[in-house]
Length: 562
Image (cartoon, rainbow, N blue to C red; front, top):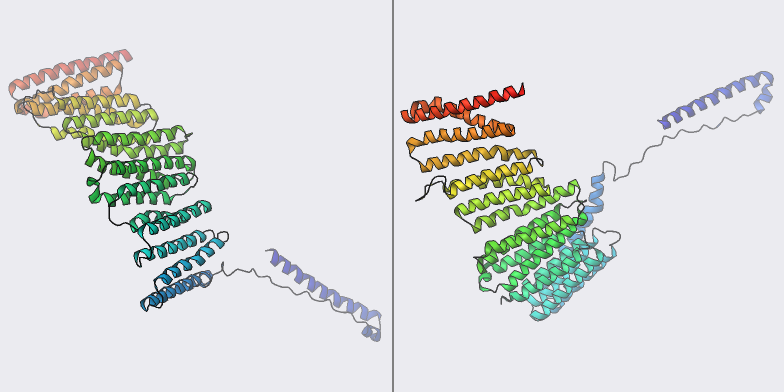
């Protein structure tokens, strides 16, 4: 806008100068002679040309940025790749034609890695994202060339090859630590895990293998404390368990328990302690991958422990797996105590706390059977609800709901009549009674913590009634069941209603009222037409007395409130 105004002003000035010049010429022509006037020369003022400035747009920002990227970037990379491909083909041809012998081939591989390493080191300041990849590539080429001398040409023995591979990997670890490069450490870790596999002779020397891997994990634990790496810890964790699983398939049952167990427990403890420490330092940033690493550490550690204990200590397996979970929650609790928790931090720790919940349930399921298992599941759901309420962990509190559902209805797997079983005096009804009591206690304990606590209240009374109906169905003859169903509804409905009026608990009043309403509907719609005369008389008698008592309570309450 300013440029346009400037142009307009300059144009007006030039037109005014021209007009002034012609006026001056006309005035001088009246007072002077033609000769004099002709000798006077007045120069026209130089017109200032108006130059329209144009905004320059760089090629990268203009519409041809894609062409520019192809020309400057993609073409260069494709050219380098083409040269590498041509070199590989030439090297392959030289080997086929035997232009170069075995030793020269190895030295060519070693020497070709040097310029890659040199250029990677040279560009660490100018190209920080490219440099670690080049250094890793150079070490990988050097690693491959050295190993080729052992596997293809037998230039040196197994011990020499293994020591050389370890030294190369250790060098890469040192470079990654000095450069603080996660990419370079990934290359180094690949060499660490591949070295014993590549030189393996199939002798199953697992004590050496697990000792070697555990030492490297300790080294990684020391390095990881100072590095905010995200992906490499997860890769190393998976590599540990993958190597163990590959070895254990077919060898674990024939081995001794010490080395596999120490290796798994060592990896389990090292990763849990380290990742919880990293979580503490990076929890304000983006800790998703750290949380994933913690979850995989717990899950894979539990599976491998299940495998080991199932072979060597099958009878103690539930107890030993419980110890594994206790270790997890001990480290988890210590991490919470070392942190000043904000709302967001607490949510993350609540999510992590849920990781062990399905594993605890699996331990209970595998260790117990029958009614003992059902009672243990209900007790576990109650204890977790109390713990979640006490620690104010809403995620764990909500996660108990599916556990409650499974635990409460697992008892229906045993809804059959046993010999010498007394109705209402057996383990099945005890579980129904205990479950109802646990639900009621869960409500009273957590009602101030969460509005979801009403789930426990609204489930306790129906679940107890359901237990009574199951006992009546299994313990009495068909002609007595309808009458006993009605008596149960009358008895418990009246007790609930009276207690609700005395303690002024609205929910109990509603429960009692609904029970009596069901009895009334059942009596007039079904019992009246299907019960025998004697049971009809008894049902009507009990129902009439109950309704009169109920009406008396309602009238008394009405007089007290008016």
